[in-house]
Image 1 (cartoon, helix red, strand yellow):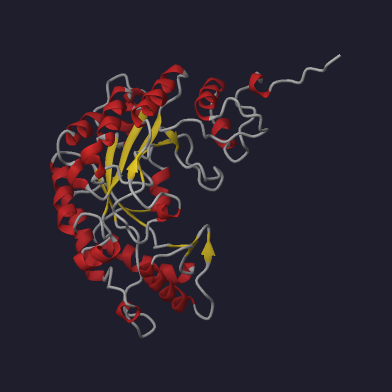
Image 2 (cartoon, one colour):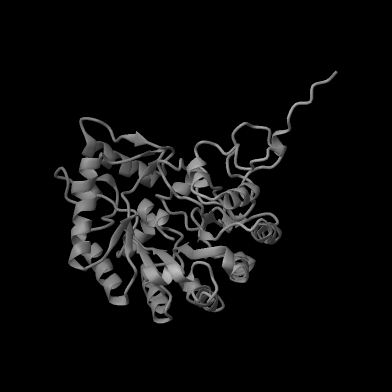
Length: 371
């Protein structure tokens, strides 16, 4: 007589097979919310003993690589609207896994509609949503494809399923133009019965924000490090336009680079432009204070395993600063030793932040604390 083995897909507890890496999120939920998260995020037909949140096609788990004990993102979403990015920033961490050429995702509209409908079907509790962590939602591809516009329209339709809406871009010009500006303003107005309205109001936090990445004041540095991105002037003008329209803005002065002089040398000795002299950082922070950004975000530059020619030059800077050791390699990238980074790169920047009364948040801290 054949023995019938239990089907793991029929387990009475839909959260029982969550990978230990993500278990803290499910443990923090009540049974109903945990069941909804499981139905939305976990692959239903997998027979693995432990499951990771991989199921949605478009409205995905915020950071599929992160262990919740080390990077406690909790329950939040990320919509990477496009594949790849035309900005071609030399230091971009996404170049390690995104395609070299920017392009549209297959069946984006259909996948987005399905995921959003599933949020309602499974009654998944609201959470923050980020557009886009790995590719710019407002790169020039948007002018023809319009996928970011579609995403914002659909987020507005399903606004009750999201707490904060966070946009990350190097092209605030498009964000500050219609119809995008109107959509951002509407996303920032929560209905009286929105489940997060009271909490966000009590904390004095907006429900939408645009994080603009602008690490340089010098156009020479911008052209060298952000070759495909809008100019410094364009971004400054567009940030001002967003603020004048009442849209909350976070300024990402990120990443931070070493600045001359060091070890009796200058960046020019390595064939690199002087990216961030203190005078330029001072101008950026003065501008941030003038237009009234929420806060600034920073982190030291990291160098990927297969660096571009520009970042190979920066790697030599890091190795010289770390001598007699070489720059440490950690989690897929070379970094400055912590003590050197704090004294040479981060410390002077934070001193300037204090001078201008600017709240400064480290990149990881900024991301995971947005409610």
